[in-house]
Structure formats: C-alpha cells, structure tokens
Image (cartoon, rainbow, N blue to C red; front, side):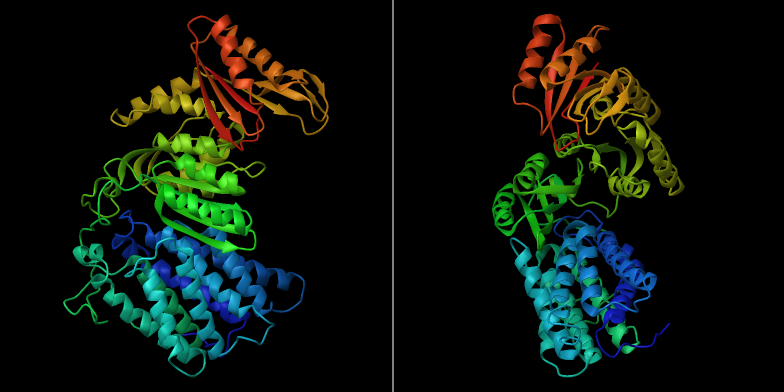
Length: 558
C-alpha cells in the first residue's frame, strides 16, 4: 500500500525509511538467505540484515516515544539519524549486518551535521550516500569487488550524477545499485559458480528500494537474485538456485566472532592489525568510543582477548561454522541445512565463551549485571541452526528465563532439552561428555548426570555489607560460596579459595576445575594446584582463564 511520500529528509523520513526497510528485508529474508554464498555459505545474510535493521527501527522508535512522552513534538533529524545509526551498530549481525550498520552510520554523519536544515534535500542525500559508501569500504580490512561494497559505491556514483529532490536522487541510487547487483556474478567467481548475485548487495538494494518508497510513495520493481546470460543486465531471473558454492579455497576459519567494544581510536587501530593477522572477513565499524567488531578466525579466544586488550568488549557472540560446513571443507551443500544437534550455553566471561565455542557450543555472554533475556536465548538457539538443541543456562537465576526460551524454540519446531546447570563449571562437565552421535535422550541423560555430579563454588568480593549463611560480611570481604550459599568469609582470595576447595574435596572428588577471572591473583592457580597435588591423591586439576566473569574464581569438583 502506498503511503504519503516525504518531500525532504527529516526525522519522520528517517522513521519511515527504517520501517519500510525492515518490511522489505522481512519479505526478502529467506530469499537472501538462500543465495548467501560469500564470504561464508552459512545461509544467514538475510536474517542478519533483518535483525540489524530491526535494532535500528527500535532505536528510532524509542526517540519518538521519548519526545511523545515529554510532549516536545517530533525529534530533530539529527536525533533520529543518530538513533538509527546507534541502533544498527549495537544490533549488527554478521558480516553483512555490520557493513549495513556502517552505511547507516555514514549517512547519519552527513544528515546530522551542522544543524537541522543543512542536509535535508537531494544534495544532502547525495552527500550522505557517498559518505556511506566510502566509510563502509574503509571499515573492511580487505575490500572485495562484487560484494555489497561494490553495490554501495555504484549507488553513490549514480546518485551523484543526477540533480533533483530526494525522490529523484533515491531512485537514481536504487537503479545504479540494481544494475551493479546484476553484474556481481561477473566480478566474483564464487557467485558465478553458484549462479547468484551477492546476498549482501541484494539486501542493500532492498534498503534503497525502501528509500525510494519513502520519498515517492511507490515501491520499485522486483530485484534479481540469480545470474542470467546477460551478466550486466538488471533483467534477470528471480529464482534462487538449489545449491550454493562456498567462497574460493578451502580450510577457512572455523568461528565467527562478533562483539561490541568500548575503546579509543588508537587502540582500535592496533586491534585491526592484530585481528587481520588472526583471520579474515574483518570488519570494524563505529567510532566515538563504541565499535562493532566482526571477524572469522580459528582461535576465537585470541580474537576476544585482542578485544580485551583494546578496551571493554561485551555482547560477545561466537558462532562455530560446524564440522563439515562448506567454509571448513570447501565442498558444496544445500543452503540452510540444519545440523542434527547443537549445544547452546550461557557463559559469564569472554574466556569461557571461547572455550565453549571451541568445543562446538553456541554461546550467549552473560554480562555482569545484565543477564540475558529469553529472546537472546531463543536467538542463540536459532543461530545454532539444529534440529535438536541442548540448552545450558549455567546460572540458577536463569532457569525460568531458559525454560521460556526453550518453550518458544519448541513452538518453532526445534527439539530442546534444558539441563538446569547452575554454574559454568557444571556446563563444562556436561559439554565434556556430550556426544552428538548418541540418541538425543541418551546424550541429555549423560550430560545431566555429569552436571549433577559436579559441585560448584565461586570466590567473589562483597560489594556491600549483608547477612549471609556464614555471618555478616562487609564491603570488600572475600566470599567463598559453595553450591550458591556463602560458606566462608575471609580477607584474602588465595586463603579463602583454599578453604573452599578443602571443604569441597572433603567429600571426595576426581577432578578439580579452576576458572580464573581477570581479578584473580597471579599465584592463586599454582597455589591451589599444589594444594591438590600434595594433599589429595589421584585428583587432577585443570585451569581455564574466564576473562571478565564477575567472580574472581570459579571452582568445580567432579
């Protein structure tokens, strides 16, 4: 249904464009997923673009709702444009979503500059499209032609060649992008082999089509998805192929790592260099102290550690491309083929996120003071892309949240088993006995048994005075919690940890797991390992680095 077109760029135009773009990406999502072959044939480009746009829409709507609540009328263009860019940045998913976030940020930097009326006309839109294309290209470590970057540049070139109002400029950009999209198979061999256009570029054309509709009231014509004999023509078939080929070469990185990062420009420049040496598909977007980092690597932990050295990473998402995935084997596969079984786990620190991911789990990071909502867990279950999923909440307080997520996933046809793990060390024990080749019920029973046989403890520092099972503690006291209850109150981390460990091992045990937080003293692991070796025969010890996990130390005894 046509709407009343906008005549110039203001806050309402931003709101309308974002809403129409989300609707367009929603309609095209499955089609775009099906043609996703580059840089990884993981069949999620359409979904990632949709989720990125959804976050932008939510941010813009929040700005309008805030002005409505205060009776201050509609927001300024600068407020709406910045909200759009910020929402896309914090919600960006995947390689394509991260680039889309930078495109929107580039446009917002022009639209929001120098006051309300400086860039609201056709000339302003031309400038915005040019800056968006250039900034997106700069954000990618190694730009490749035949991708969304090519389509964005073509849109900016076409927009720059016309004079007129926003509708005229938007239509020129759309037509230029559409023509460039149809030519992408001739620029990138993997697209030509698969007989498709670039998925990210297809998504950008949908977003630009929404821009046309915003300023003209008319939705543009259909967009091509598969290649034709006339590679440069826009008149090509709209039928997606049955099979998708992978990116050139074999043996690509096994993990996709994405996180938000609070860091300065200098630290981010160093981070780019380090991540570029670790993997590929590196895209770092953002600015003003907040960045979205995306990279494909074999060592997920190293990618996260690089972020920790640069600043404060959070909302960390690590996706394992999977054994037998085309990205790791170079073979062809049916698009969007589900794995039989996957594990989804909530983890308290970056180090554990890497550890779990290397074991094949899809992870959700529980940020300190910000436990994940059920929607985040449902999204992680979807991201695992399996018929059967084992869900490990790793926190007693998340049991109901995880149960709600499991029910939602079951309603979508996914078989989900919730193992009520109350600590990340119980999750480690469950993951250690996980065998995807077993029958689902047997696997769940074995994992549940291993988790239940693992006692857990943590050593933390009290933030305030409070009553505990062991008496009154003061702010700054070291607390030793066993199975969720405070059992020891001390003043020294190492001494308190030793006391807790002795109490746990008094009931027996075969394996001690220590997970060190960033605040743990350097010598505590060596001290506890020595204590176990000298005092408890036939008990082994394994040590992991958990990163910024809240607790100073996590302890598990099996």
